Image (tube, rainbow, N blue to C red; front, side):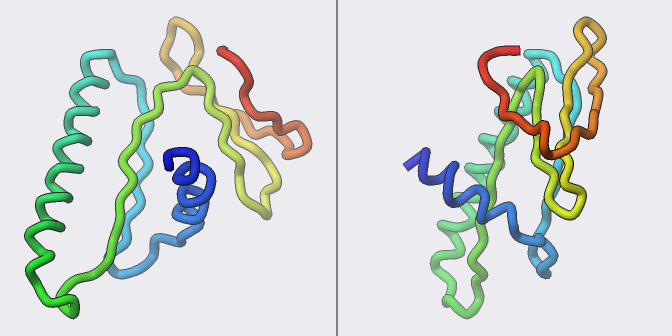
Length: 121
């Protein structure tokens, strides 16, 4: 189920324009300590639990008063991240952390040089 979610549903989900009246898309990035990352993960768990409580409570309402919605909450802590940039730029953005400084460096790479990450960085 997890593989199906990652290979089929996530790509389709993120092809959305997120421009509907109830839509929102937020991307945040930064450097966090282990303690802060643990705290942030706990916040995501609380938010997911709150969503489930709201959905359970609203299930009592008539369908006409409810809107279908979904949320993906995720944290990825990686040293190097490659993200495929959609057309028309035909480029990839490579983000990497400068060792020791925590600085995030972004580099645009032509699509022809794109290669998925393999192994550890």
